[in-house]
Length: 143
Image (cartoon, rainbow, N blue to C red; front, side, top):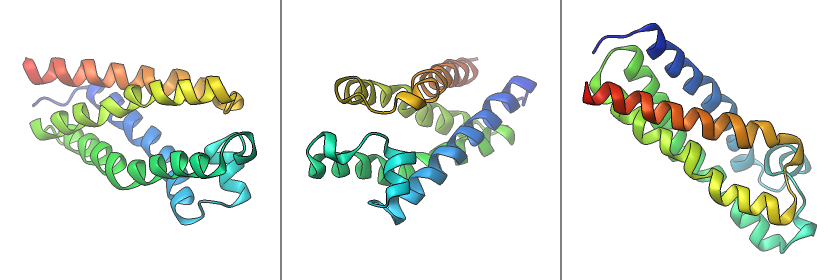
């Protein structure tokens, strides 16, 4: 498949967003209950809700992002930059969590008033990029 400037833009944006997210999530995997992780990765406070549920919810996303989503996005972005059809397919698959996970996180954050300082990053960049990557990869795969 032809590698265009837009392909590079989408792939590099995916790598950059996933690099930030997976870096933070790996910190959460390694130090799940540290003060820094609670303040800078999870948001909110376990004291505002059931601490068991708070840590289970956040650690579940940390593990899923670090061991499943990040490798898919990285492989997809690299495959796109190399012009392989499988790269666009993997990037399409990896684009879904960008916007899909926004739904439970929106409900969680809205109801518990978490992550107010990350609103633009969580509610604008991630879902918007996910939808754009989905559309771009789908269009490229059907051409």
